[in-house]
Each structure stands twice: as structure tokens, then as C-alpha cells.
Image (cartoon, rainbow, N blue to C red; front, side, top):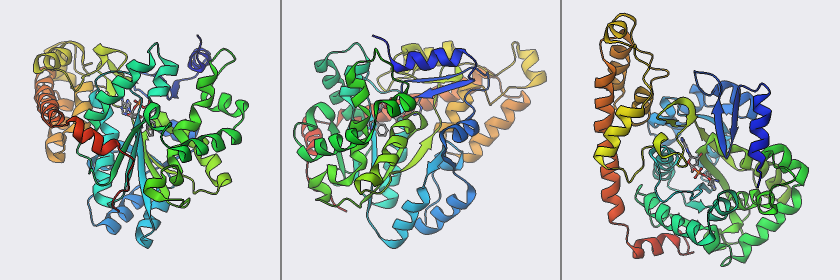
Length: 403
Ligand code: TYM
């Protein structure tokens, strides 16, 4: 079965420098994805200092290091969410995961860590969609397998620490049959979008199965508040803020076009850059390639061996060369990972300086990263072990949320 993505990749070989779709991320340049170009290409806005200052002033909170370091770098009308916050008007958060593997990798944590923080700061409800149907349609997996993966992924998501009184988590295969209001919105969205439009947005082709062509409406529907009558009743005007990797933006460009036609506000977005694959910043960490990823199920030994073996080094070829010319933090995967996960700004800056000058060798940088990842993954595994079936039932039962 061919996919629209293949069509996109073929187009890319004809000269594009980068390709970012929900199913594929590739950069032809050694310096990785050009995010400034992507902002222009996608038509989003850069998160600038003015917006950050306003956020800090309104919430009384220092911006998360993901914002301060440009990891969440782009947005669509985030200022409208801040207006609502200021005016005490309701809004909610929406994010998701496509269960294509039993275990999440550390890159998947980026939107979830950030969403948890936003939930704390704004004190608003959150819905999390698991698109098991998407993975069934796109991958060589059975319905039963994607459902089982969704359940495993839900445990990892809960382990990120979301508030059970303010969070509803659902899998499409489970939930769509339970909630007629959700399906009605899916159909309303489907009637507003033509095949030519999804062809343009997602690159679908004539030999793609019809499930793929109809799917974007299912990822769009959670951005309409009355898809969740048990949380929002019939209210259509509760605004939605979606934190996600920028690869998911095409779904929400489509949603933003449709929402006003159906009498809803356009969803607002916060986009992150990609957590790179171990092999280099040209592509994102992906669950489909186990050697490119550190999984949340990895042992200390696996983490150590993967980082030592695969993490692309921006250091010199020999110790002498490294000491003379220094390392390149922009392409060094270990440094880039620390940029995501080492919260201490001063410690990170010291590593950057010492590595750039050549004083710090790649081996020591990797050692720091291995220790940090081992600790982080272990903390996650401990939290995950407390997620019982009862806890899952609490998060996944359709119910009213406190807000
Ligand atoms: P999925 O499972 O591909 O990814 C889940 C979330 O993780 C982000 N992500 C990454 N972020 C940074 N670095 C990476 N290497 C990386 N890999 C994945 C994705 O951008 C996403 O935010 N179709 C979606 C599921 C979904 C969804 C949503 C996502 C349904 N509704 C609403 C975001 C918002 C998917 O397959 O995600």
C-alpha cells in the first residue's frame, strides 16, 4: 500500500531541503531542520521575548526552560489564550500520542512534560487522545495490537504526573463508540474538507486507503469543546490550546480552517522542535527505529551502550584535534539532549563553553548524559509501576473534570 508520505519524499528528492509531515521528518542539511524556514513554510509565528514576558507577567511564573531555550519555539495565536487567561474565560489543553510501539521514547516526553507544566500553571482541563486507529491505518498492525499498545502508552502518559481530577485520556477505538457527540463532530468536520484539500495538506495519493483520507477529522475533533459533553456540556466556545511537536501542525492547520465554519474558536498551538535521533540532528527520534531511540523501558546498561555507540559526536576526530579545534555543540547529540533535559542553566552553559573550547572531551560529555538519562528513566519507571488498572480507569472514564 502506498502512502501520501512516499509521494512527499519523492518530491523532496527533486530538491527540497527538508520534509516535515506527521509521518516523516528528514533534513538534507548537516545542521538539521531549519526551524525558521519551517515557520515561514507552515505560516506559524515565532515565540518571541514579548510573548514570553507577557506570559511571565500574567502567570507570575518563570517560563519553562523549554520556552527559554527555544525548544517550544513556534505558536499559533497563543496570545489569544493569554487574553482568555487574563479575562478569566475558560480554555482547555489537548495533546496526544499515536501508539505505534509498546514503549515511549524520551523524545515523546517533550510535549507531555510541557503539557503537565501548562496544566499546573493555568489550572485547566486536559484531554489526551491516543490515535490507535491512525496507527492501525498507517502501520502493519492489527486493531488488537494498537489497542494493547495504547493501554501501555497510557501508563507512560499517566506516569508523567497529570492531575487525575483535570485529565481525560482516551483511545479512539474505545471512545468513539461511547460518545455520539464526538462522532457527530467528526462527520461535521469531514463534510467541510475536500479530498483535494487533504491531498494538499498531507500528500495523500490515489492508492491510499480511504481510512487515511478520513482520519484527519478524528484528530481534529478533540479541538472542538462540545466533543466532550461530559466535560463542557454543549458549550462550543471553550478555546483549545494544543502543545505538540511541529510535525503535528498539518492536522491543526486543517482544524483551524474548519473550526470557525462550525461555530467554534480556532484552536491555538505551541510547537516544539524535534528531539533528535541518536545518529544526528538530521532526523527526529523515532520509535520505529530502536537504535535511534532511548526508550522509557531501557535498562541502565542499554542507555549506556546506546549513547556510547550511537550518539553522534560533534567533537574532534582525535583528542589532539578536539583540544585544538573544540567541539561543535550545535550538532553534538549528547549536548543537544542535555539542552532538553538538564534544567540547571548555569551547568548547561559551563558544559557548552568547555566543550566548545575543547577542554571537555566527548567521553565526559557522554558520561554526564548517560547519568542524567539513567536517573530520568528510572524515576519514570518507578512512577509507571504505581499505575494500576484502577488508576487507568480513573483517567479514561468519561466524567466531569474540575476547573
Ligand atoms: P506521535 O505518537 O507521533 O507523537 C506524540 C507527540 O510527541 C511528539 N513527538 C516528538 N516531539 C519531539 N521530538 C520527537 N522526536 C518526537 N516524536 C514525537 C509529537 O509531535 C506529538 O506531539 N497523530 C499523533 C497523535 C495525536 C496528537 C494529537 C499529537 C493525536 N492528537 C494532538 C499532538 C496533539 C501522533 O501520532 O503522535
